[in-house]
Length: 359
Image 1 (cartoon, rainbow, N blue to C red):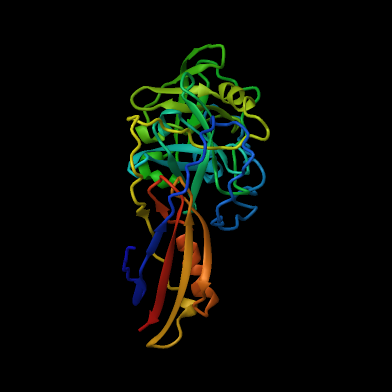
Image 2: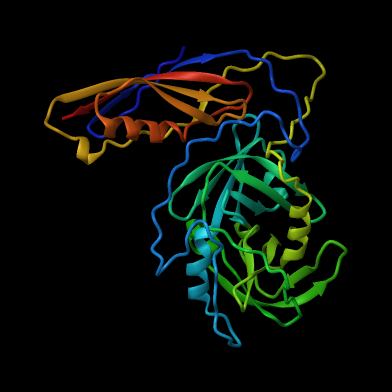
C-alpha cells in the first residue's frame, strides 16, 4: 500500500492505496487478428465542438479544396489538416519513454497511421491531438517493416480524419505540402516542396522530397495541390523520404473487418520465471478545482474513487466509491483519473481518497 499526496488549487490531498492482483497474463495473440474478448472502451476525453465555418465535422473526412495554382495555399492547408494530425508517444515495458513521432487519423473511429519505427519495442502509447486531448492507444492493427508503416487504434470516437488519395499524382516535380502537428511548435510547421525522385515498388511508390524537415515530423501526411493525402513521411532530416498512399491503402486492406487492435507480445529474455514487479504510476495528472464549484473559504469536500488498470497500464475504468457531494468536483476527478497510466505487467486497481478544500 502506497500513500501519495498532491496539492490542487488552494489545497488538495491525495492518497493512493494500490492493490495489485497477480492475475494470469492473457494468452498471446498475433497483432491484428480477431479477438473473441473485446477490451472495454476507455473513457473518451471529448474534443471542443468544431464550428462548421472553420473546421470539418469530426465524423466526416477533412475535405480540402485548394484553388489550382502553381504553389500551395499552405496556411489554409495546415488549418484544415492539422485537426487530424497527432503526436504519438510510445513507452516500453518498464514505462520508459521511447520516442515521440507524428501520425494522423485515417478514419473517424480513431484508427491512425504512423511509422513502424515509431512503435518499435513499444508496449503502450498515447495519442495527443491539437486541441489538447490525450487518448490511450489500444494497440496495433497492422505493421510493415519494409514499408515502415503501422496502423493503430486510439481509444476515441468521432475524430476528424484525412481521406487517402485513390489516384495519387506523384510525378517528379509535383508540388506537395507536409503538415506536422500543431503541438510540435516550429518543428511541426507546415512546409512546401516538390517531389525530386520517385522509385516504383510492388506495394507502392517511394518518394524523395526536395526539402528538409525535423526528425519528429516522421509520420506526417504528404498533401498534393488538390488537398489529398498522397503519402506519409517515413524518413525525415536533410533528405525527406515518403511512402505513397497506395502502399498505405494496401496495408489497410489486409486488416480483417472484425480485427482487434492489440500490442505485440514481447518475448522474455530469460527462460526462468521471474516475479512481476509491483505496479507504479508513471503518469498521474492532478484534477483541477473548477471555479464553479468554489463556495466559501474553509469549506472542504471529500470522496473516494477506484481506478482499474489493464495489463498495459491504461486506466480502463473509474468508479465513484464515495461522492464528494458535488457533481463538478466528481467529474473533475474522474476526468483526471481516466488519464492515469501505470507500468504495464498485470491488471490492478488503486483506491484514491481525495479532498477538495476552498481556502
